[in-house]
Amino acid sequence: MATKKVFVTVGTTKFDELINTVTTPEVLKALSNRGYNHLILQIGNSSLKPDSSPRDGFQQIEYFNLSPSIGEQMSSADLVISHAGAGSCLEALEARKPLVVVTNELLMDNHQLELAEQLFHDGYLYYCNCSTLSNLIEDMDLTKLKLFTGDRSHKIVEFIDRVMGF
Image (cartoon, rainbow, N blue to C red; front, side, top):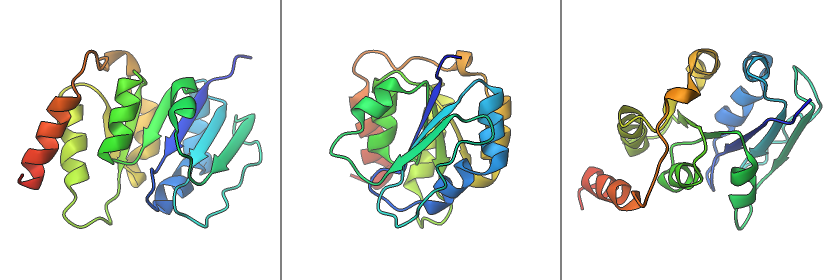
């Protein structure tokens, strides 16, 4: 059986709710039903110790806190699930990886949600919150996502600047 990797990143933040949600039997089974069988979790600034035992269709589950670069994990992934940080989103899109963004509803003045909504409307990613992640995984059609081609980083920077009022 071929390995199909999912890379989950929370950047440098602490978003334990996302890590806990991704490792539930419900989400693992939804991913496994789509052929994914290797999970890599970048858990950020957390003291969480996720269960890394193989289960629910996953042959391998591993995690790490922080790394100077997540480029290798990102480029080897078949799917990226990310928090809604602009840097993480941009890195996944520029690596041309299918992207699911999970917004953190606990953030005040959630500009990340606005970014996720805009990139979704532009056709580059899917987004949800932790409570709707398993349904999104079951229903998403990754073939409908547009590839992020060329250097569109400036458009994202312009959008972020506009949202932030710069």
